[in-house]
Image (cartoon, rainbow, N blue to C red):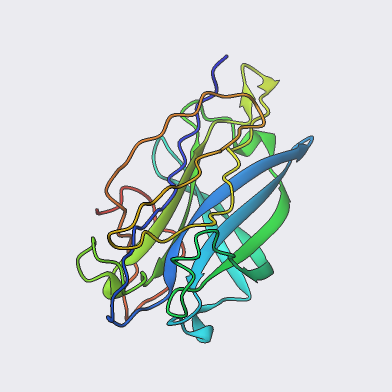
Length: 226
């Protein structure tokens, strides 16, 4: 059976500029089956280490879980910060002082009740925060625009049978910036522990519901404005 998972990986192509920046570069939500009904939920956040504010880094963040059929809030996952490490650039032409990114990981293992996750249309997780990295050139007013991270997953029981599934594993970006007038490559060596088919597409980033006056929206239900 082909198990379909839609995971919105936020990839923001940035260029060298003198504009002021905020903090969020990109990220994704992951869900990994551990054993039984236990799953590890992870939020990977990529943070502007030069222009980002330390006060924008949370010790604990919250990912909300919704039912797709009616956008009903099932609950939330409180994720403590597990690590905060710099990304090492593999392209020395982009390894300049004005471009430094931190990989911040929030993660926790949860037991998902079978009865709460049996709807045939599946579920989704969301996390929202303002604001995006202000040096982004291809988004209008990025320093005042929110990010909405979104991940869909199927019911954990289908036809009264436990359905085990995990999201794809994305590699750590080692070349997250595209340098102006220079060749650029990005490793899409993503793997799926279930052997699912992976399909990639480009889409307009989701703006979310947060704003500079309310930087944390705690994951509002879909849909999200572009």
